[in-house]
Amino acid sequence: MDDVSRMVARQYEAYAYPAPFTDLAAQIAEGYFEFGNPADYAALLWPEGRPRRPLSILAAGCGTVQAAYLAHTNRDSEVIGVDLSEASLAHERFLQERHGLANLRLFRGDLREVHELGRRFDCIVCSGVLHHLADPDAGLRALAGVLAPQGAMTLMLYGATARTGVYMLQDALRRLRVPQSAEGVAFARRLVEQLPDDHFARWYLRGAAELRDDAAFVDTFLHPQDRAYTVPQVLDFLERNGLAFGGWVDNAHYYADAALARFTPEVRGAVAALPAREQWAVVEMLTQNLGMHMLAARHAGEGTPAPEPDFASPGWQSLVPRRVPGLRRAEAGGRAGSAGVASIADNPRASSAAPAVAFSRSGQTIELGPGQAALLEAADGSRRIADLLALPALAQVPAAAREPLTREFLAQMWRLGHLLFARGAA
Ligand SMILES: C[S@@+](CC[C@H](N)C(=O)[O-])C[C@H]1O[C@@H](n2cnc3c(N)ncnc32)[C@H](O)[C@@H]1O
Image (cartoon, rainbow, N blue to C red; front, side, top):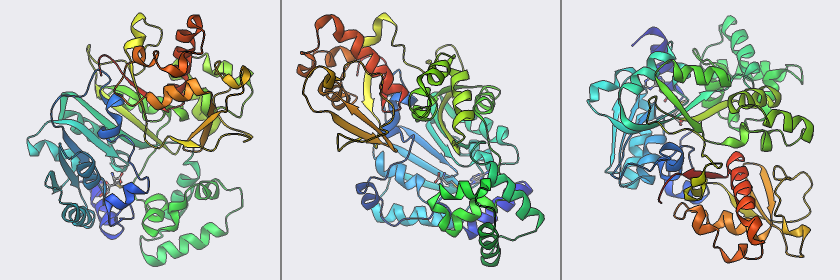
């Protein structure tokens, strides 16, 4: 272990992260889910179809909860959790016992030595870890080295724009030699209160409720080692280490449709017209609110599926849509500022008295006509678009318009991050 990892390990011994909860089932019943969990995001990880066997899943730098959560929500799969911090693993063990997770194994160690387990993994989840390594590239290569040929990773890396103030404060606190201790945290909190109201660090604090917790505060402002990435840097990080970008976990933050809802159609249209990578990069600079990037990655190579479904191909009707977790019906009607779907053509309120149906997710609300709502509700990952086109709710749409409207609507739901699409038979 290098000096940086020794310091990082010390921090997570003293301030295990995230703030642990004591019952997975109760937490899940309250709506808790983790982005990138293969139980929910298989269509993102393996658009060509999930490997048809129990998965072997690695939670690299699992922290206090993640490995147990993955084992609990993927009971047919084997989960291995690795972390430097014994305090974090102790809580994983507590959850393991509490929920009878016979499919979970935990190891204390450095993810860069994970090859010593002598295993290959179908799925690797590594969130909030690689940016704490002295050499994140070496960490990513170590993970790629144990990823099965058709395996998929979900990564969370810090985003540079929203964390500008975090790095300003980290720099100041480091020069002041503020320690990772109760006194250090108390001093840093007092210092933050005296910052100008519009200081970038204050702006960040306002959006991050978890920072009331000391472990999260230390993790953010007193971390000995962290770095962040812009969109082009994320893509470059993957590609220079032999991986292919497999898609964002939540497109809403990267495509102009939702992310630039506050901009005029003129600006939104100009950004939406850019090639995808340019669009993501521009959206990130215009919104300035991406504190993390969550994405899927695969081995680069000829057979690696493209990250976006091809709605323009003749085979588009064989795509299999699936709603993402967290999308739910909401109260319809009368909300100003409902984000996103201004351009959906089949809003039947324009043509009939049918009431609108609202759905919301992560602060976005969309108001849909009955045909659109029926499409979204039927998108449960078991049926192809061709089957959805036969839904009775679409019968009122003129036959000639049904396919183009459905195609446009589903593509927009993908850009808003509400739907994922597997390719081929469900
Ligand atoms: C911010 S926490 C994230 C925990 C978890 N992945 C999650 O998303 O809830 C980072 C974790 O990575 C662990 N970690 C950092 N560097 C590591 C390394 N080189 N090998 C293994 N674990 C590491 C830390 O001990 C800590 O528990």
